[in-house]
Image (tube, rainbow, N blue to C red; front, top):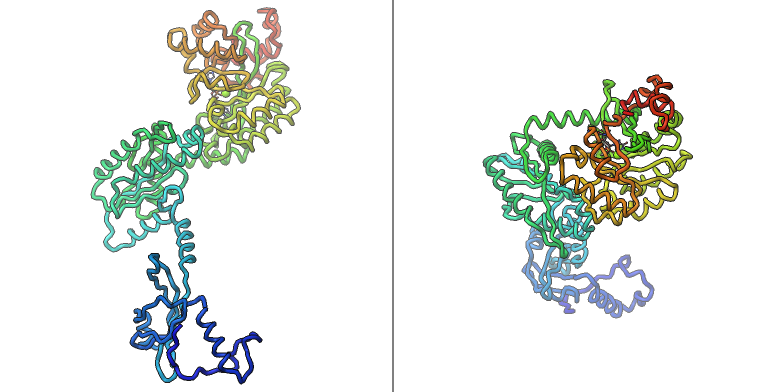
Length: 585
Ligand code: C2E
Ligand code: MG
Ligand code: MG
């Protein structure tokens, strides 16, 4: 450390160091000065004193690298006589370091000098930068997040010379399936790649942001016309459709895109984003993988959907659900092997709705679990009537959505509820094949629980999901229901006949009972009886799904039942059921 003579160092008593050892004795000012000198020299913070020409009068070790010269802030301090604190960065040993420096104008020994103290805050700054990035940038794709794009759009909207721009909402199709099937590492890699393909050919004034899992928002700014945007997005869709090669797999992906334009489709970020979202939703429903611009009819659709959503929430709250039952029939003896509970909704105006109109929505809205518990509760409530109508040993099937089947928490609570009924062995759970194929806990964790309490497992709608025949080999189920699409006109469709034979022999080898779904005609039934070994079927031909009340109101035709075919073990009331439901004998 180099000391320039600044004149006598004043030693104010109250400023003296508080540590006994450093005190020295009062008279020994020379040794005290030496101590202070050493302290100053070794201070981790840089300390300098400069004159108004920028010459260094003093610099301790931490400031030894400084060359002298007045920075902008230092000059300012001299000029105004007021202290300042500034962040300065210097290159040091090849790396950039950031310092927080305070400059004080002081008068020492009749000279105006600048006393500066600086702390190296490089690490702290780097940490702050990381924090900043994690608050505003997505770690996986390194794209700005929703806050950033919202901020950018708001800035655009506030500008005096705001021009036209487009906001696109992008959602990767079936990403959940891909994630479940290939695993999260591949899913993540796919997201990064898709983001890269979307982000190609963007201008500096455009911005791509990842706003959640598989959703992106793209700002195209400025744009002159809708055609220009349509053209750009068409190329983007093509790029995304090309196969991805990830981790040795060739993966195909597509995105659904909804686009809104400023100012036609909204004048705020929220409105534009909302409308792009609505347009995207339309694309999803119309088969995915394409793009659509927002238009007013979509708004009306969205409102209608909102209404359904509201009434669905109300219906759940008010428990306005009931079950229709459809029998599974032995096609040789016409015995009822079991029944399937099919949920129905009584809407606000009292009209009965089939699940096609609300099951997906209920699943989306997270209401499906409650609904399934309601179905079970209704069955339990009606068990005596069910027994009287269909017999005491028929199985009772309940449908569970694939999404629920993969939800261990729900399935555990549902299994408990089934056990609490006191007759869990009567129940079968129907799940679509997707639940078995995707890598969820269903197969390993849930199935054993259901098995343990004696609940049967049925694969519903088999043949239209994502699984292959070979996947069947890994599935441990008691029953397999062949989807109606294979059964319709089966007597006239050789290809479906072939598929049916394949499923049949596989199921037989695996010890699963086969049920043909959706038998409607005599010809279909005759084909099944003559050309297959399938024993059981369900369908309008035997009975439509029917409410228990409707069955009860039908008068049992005791004598007719006995008289017509005594060989058939149909309970008395069941003949009433048979008549009411149009069940043929
Ligand atoms: P699913 O489990 O495959 O039930 C069979 C569907 O086919 C029923 O439709 C039934 O009415 C209909 N069906 C039966 N036989 C015939 C026929 O011969 N011809 C025709 N055209 N259709 C026939 P529904 O009741 O509308 O139920 C549709 C789907 O909704 C069900 O398909 C099931 O996946 C789902 N679902 C029903 N109830 C519930 C429930 O409580 N929870 C859940 N998660 N899903 C349910
Ligand atoms: Mg079913
Ligand atoms: Mg089915």
